[in-house]
Image: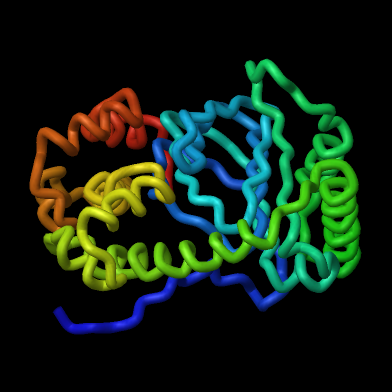
Length: 287
């Protein structure tokens, strides 16, 4: 195997310090496990959405729920049917500029319907609701108002929902995320090929047995499950954007087991690819 160095590629923000903000509809979408070098906030406006954080069980978000996802936390998201969400991603450089101690903090803040231990998140909910009403970057006035409300949201999170992280935990996280970044970047480039356990373990200088335990611990799934989840993300996207047959898409994206794909798809979306395509045509849903 040709030896190269692969690093995790972060989100492409408009600049090093700009907030990524969007209000968008999803319809039977799936995003494979990943992480960001920055803070992410999901705020559900319509429908329902499933989020997985590491090895945690599925978090079913419903209308009005929100979730604050810390930097470098592995997560995946899927929308079983149709949902509308507000997505905010605040990059690390911006956080560091206004919160110099951010490396030693993490945020514990969520509102999830049905959770037994609910937090008093009224101020965060009000701040998120205020952001939904805006259309930033259309005019100087709305852009300034957007950043004003964004800074207010950060102030509430830092004041009421931040906890300290030990230096040991920070160092361990840095070391392991660097290694995971090499692995996930390699998979994203080679997911259409067969990737052996020996090959990927050699990439990060680990023996296969230790690699297997390491990957499961920090990604919350086996390496094969991760590779198939990346393939699934691409197949789901192309099911919506092309008229190619399911079998052809599986061939293109390296999915060699048709029965396994159908099992995974039905489990995630409670439907079949054919029914999903018919539904999109009937509803005239466009990407």
